[in-house]
Each structure stands twice: as C-alpha cells, then as structure tokens.
Length: 302
Image (cartoon, rainbow, N blue to C red):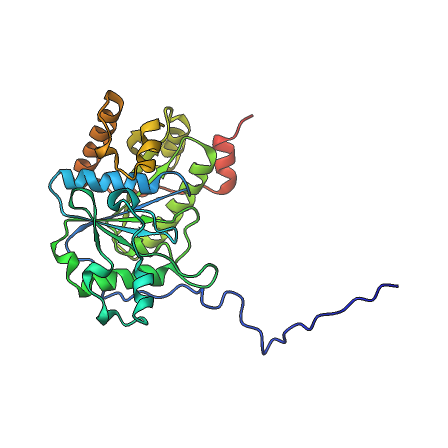
C-alpha cells in the first residue's frame, strides 16, 4: 500500500493573512492635482486605452494645451508611442533611492514625448502583493512636490481597468471626467458596466463624473448603442478598426506621425474634435449600471 506524506500546514498563528499587502491604501485627501482638467480613461484590457489616451494627449497638445499623461498599468507602455521607448516607472525610481522621494529630480520620472506631451509611467506593485492605489498616490504626490502640475492644462490617466479594484480606481479621486473605451462586443460592454459601477461609487464622495464612451475598433455600434440607451450613456467618439493603428504601434508612433491618407486624416480629425469637446466641457452623466443577468438578456442571442 502506498504511503502518503502529509506536509505540515502552517498554524493560524504563523500563516500570513491571505492578501496581506494588497489592502487598498487610503490616499491623502489634501493632495489634489489643482487647476488642470483631469480625465481618466478606462476600459477592458486590450481594448486600446493606451492608443486612445496617447492620441488624445497629442490632440490636446495640437490645440495648444500643456498635457501630462500618466500611465497606471504595471505593463507601463501607456506612453510608448509618445516617448518611443519604455520609460522607467515611478516605482522603479523610488526603489532606486530606497523610497526617499526627496532625492529624485523631475527628469528621473517625467519624460518628454511627441509634440511636448509630458509622460509619466506610475508602474505597479509586485504581482499579487501590492495596491495600485499606493502607486497612483505616490505619483500624484511626487508631481505636486515638484510643482509640475502648476503649469499643466490637461492630465490624462490611462488606467488598468478591466475589473476596477479599489486601488486602480484611485485616479477617479482626482479626475473631473472618466471616459470608457469599448468595442461593439459583449465582453467589452460587460467590463464597461463594471466600470460604470466603480465610477458611480467614487462619484458619491468625489467630483468625478462620467463623460461618455469611446467606441474603438468598431465599424458598427449597435450593441454599444443598446447598452448606452438602457443605462443612460452616450458615445462621444468612434474609431474604426484600421490597420494604420496597428502599424503605428509597431513604428512607435502616434497616429499624428503616420503618413497621411483619407482614413487617417478622418481619425486625426475625430481625436481633435473629441479633445475640443472635452476641453469645452461635457455634461456629467449618471448612468445606472445593470445587473449581470440584465446584460445577458439585453445583448445575448435568442
């Protein structure tokens, strides 16, 4: 008969609590961005948030605005097409000085991008052990201490937002408007519904409100339109699934740097129109998120 060996299991007294180090941090309520208009971009993973954020940043800069883009994803590639490289993250540089922020210079964590867009990558905590809220809080605190936000007109947070945990919802505590990037499919809209819930929760205590939806890589918008009508959202901009977008990432370039064509010119014009609309101000939306079952019933097939 085969003998089995029972491995010793840690006692309750010696075991580390599951999720230790992952508890959402409380951000300092006295640290605020200031007079800049702040936008937070959310959406399902892989939906094109970084592409949307970067080209929107360029569009604002083309309108003469001083723009700062903050990437809030451990992948830290939000500003890749703006800077043409993966820049060091705030967490990287803080670790290099043993987390003594007073030893840092602006050029250690803020990098110039295309057309003058300032770029920061917050980075993320070690997988499974930290809180994205701490990272966002430290980034904003550093920017304030170095007075970088005093001369900024627009701040764009590009946020990991497939399922918005409390930590990665932290940019909503600074934002005026949140934008949701989605495609015309069930999974993207399901994620959008979760983001609507997160924004609604933050709106109870902070000034953030939903600005609207950006339909990305979508020739049709029938599913998006049905969801928007049901919950009280509206589409602010739409971008088709064009190969030039894929090629721009490969070339480490924004869409404003690619060779002109009628299709690309239309995309650039749409980004410029969206930036002008956001700068002029948008009415706050207060959508009512659906229950999971309701989304299946609304968008599912018979």
